[in-house]
Length: 292
Ligand SMILES: NC(=O)c1ccc[n+]([C@@H]2O[C@H](COP(=O)([O-])OP(=O)(O)OC[C@H]3O[C@@H](n4cnc5c(N)ncnc54)[C@H](O)[C@@H]3O)[C@@H](O)[C@H]2O)c1
Ligand SMILES: Nc1ncnc2c1ncn2[C@@H]1O[C@H](COP(=O)(O)OP(=O)(O)OP(=O)(O)O)[C@@H](O)[C@H]1O
Image 1: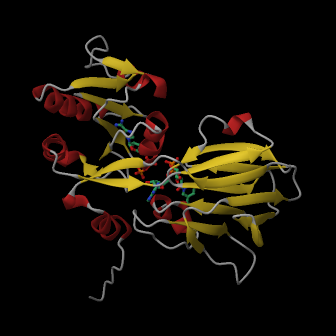
Image 2 (image 1 turned 90 degrees about the vertical axis):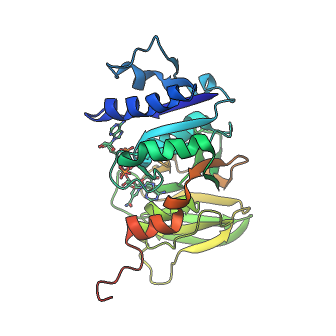
């Protein structure tokens, strides 16, 4: 069986983490594939010994799991390799928060063995896809997001106006720094920081959340995830920013954006000991009250 390993950064402890993972995988006769740039930085790993992949086309669809080593940012990047291949992601958290990457370094052996033995569940995560009129080639290839699509002001402190339509029906024009359209997964990311609600991962909804609206009655709105959202942006500058997770580009004000649920989802491996409810308690200190 094939297993892919992906990491974005190389740190002091990377070597140790990767060799721990590989030792277990080899013991269980897995065929290991490592992302090329990541593998080239690993001095104790011979790239000749392992096959590598350097783009999504080179990641085989028959890969049983992709093990992501890093933080949440690394998982977001891993998604750009997996796309619609249905390869489940196991996130080892060597980063800070590790909200999506739930396996802590000290538990690598325990959880990789659980993965091998099938003691896990799959959490299906909705993604958003983005299209535009006129077509913008910067948005062509990586036009999907696990967390959110956002628009925001560019090169100005002046707010932008975001005319918003749901299934072609006018909703409102937000006057704000920007607007976030978040998936349930993204509801604990940027949207949360802008006062948005937390959605449990399997909820079939999206959140539309203005960024710092200068208005007392603009609140986050939860909508069904089969809604198509149309955005028309205007402002003092000729361009605005569009982000998809950690990726960002500029588009001009004539560009109309269409955001909708992608036709594929991402599978996150979830271990019963590290489920979503425990994660929000542990990592967001959800509901913690020092008086009790
Ligand atoms: N003010 C904010 O809170 C803010 C601003 C911009 C982006 N972000 C988030 O950062 C993501 C991009 O990640 P990056 O690594 O490039 O940026 P980064 O380095 O600024 O890290 C962002 C932080 O958000 C956390 N995070 C990311 N996705 C999360 C999720 N689904 N649930 C809980 N926490 C999550 C990460 O653990 C990290 O601590 C975006 O998709 C967005 O959700 C947050
Ligand atoms: N391959 C790696 N090996 C060891 N440590 C890593 C590796 N990749 C990332 N890290 C650590 O994780 C940090 C954050 O990584 P990443 O950008 O993936 O996550 P993030 O989006 O900042 O989220 P988080 O808050 O979960 O760390 C890095 O600055 C580094 O300290």
